[in-house]
Length: 101
Image (tube, rainbow, N blue to C red; front, top):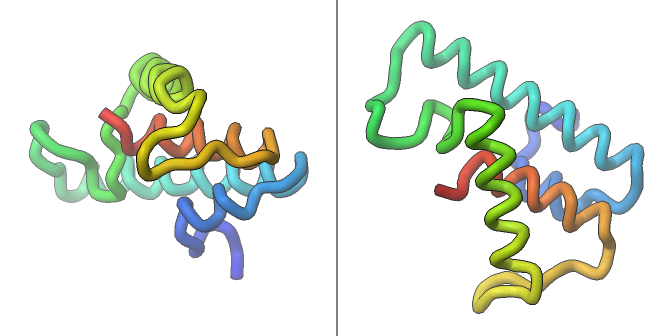
């Protein structure tokens, strides 16, 4: 199954090295492109996430949110354990830039 058709959370958790990280980045980019297309046809409410769940639609919001979540979860959270693999952690940080508010 291609990364584009897989759940991004599962894909992020499966990142273990540079090639799998690049696959994740491609899937995340494809997901954003898909949302932009869907939103151009039928816009979502401005008070919630977009069609694919994107909470942060600008690069500055995306990166700022990812960095904020990374800082806040550095030592784990009640429902989140920091993975031992830094590639996995990086993928999870970027994914949270999509969904975290």
